[in-house]
Length: 396
Image 1 (cartoon, helix red, strand yellow):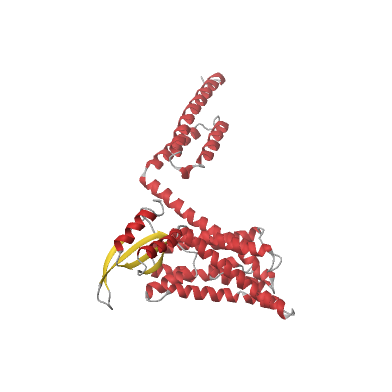
Image 2: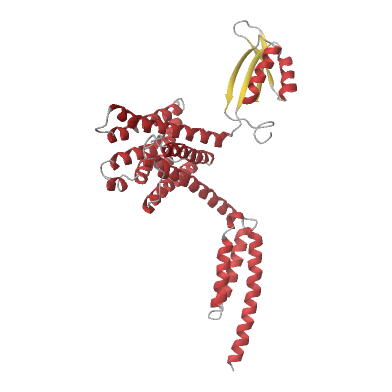
């Protein structure tokens, strides 16, 4: 016969068994979780789930079985190669969204409120928003919101990238551009505070130009390293380069960005109605000047992220004393080099070219070495975009 005393004994038995098994699986899961850092926040779910069991266990014993199944499923999934690839892909896409978030922060907080237009689709969106905002604030926050403008302008470019460019690049770019517009729309809906100067000569405006450029540069550099783009002129440049490789697309992008920067003066011109000539000039020139600062910093920071901070130069030394110069380089600079045998087209004489890569800070000393060993040597120097290997980058 089922009595209250029997029910209590049974309930105590199941409670003890629950704590025993729950403790085992929780401990086993945490040991596995330590090997997968992306699961670092899962313990919150486990703790909550365990407390949940303690509260409702007396009502439904089946919950315990479901919990054990949940732990076993997670442990088994974490061991499979497919799950590892899936988690890696999720982390990668999360990184893309992080770069989109940085770009949105730079635009919403620093660039758009101060009427900067540092090139690209974002610059066009900033100009459109600030011009409309001079006449109708509600319309600017609605139809001509920068988030909407950026999405509309990027949409045809992203679609075109799927048909003309690498599919993975197109997918990555889609995530970044949608995330960029989405975060901008979210910030606008939440009405988050912005960093806006009281005037173009304000120190806050200068800080905004610098901060906007640095943050945009980090986002751009990260996007380049992850084979993605925030859209705009980057996609146009890649499409043009694929269709006509002989075109210098970098100049095309620079020209387009420069035009957008110059157009930022329209905002100052329209806001300077009825003012004297000097004030009007300042109103027009200030956004152009600050936009160029932001554009320059974006480019430089992105370049540092993608190529590193170590700036190197390549010395091409045409000399009759290549061995002597080489020995001096090894002994004094502790650098190596390569001797190439060449023939002059004017004298038809055989010469030696010593090619040596050194850090930029060593270039002055190398020039002095060349001058001391062979004053008649002919030297031309190139800037190295990126250098890797023994003595450079990770092999200092």
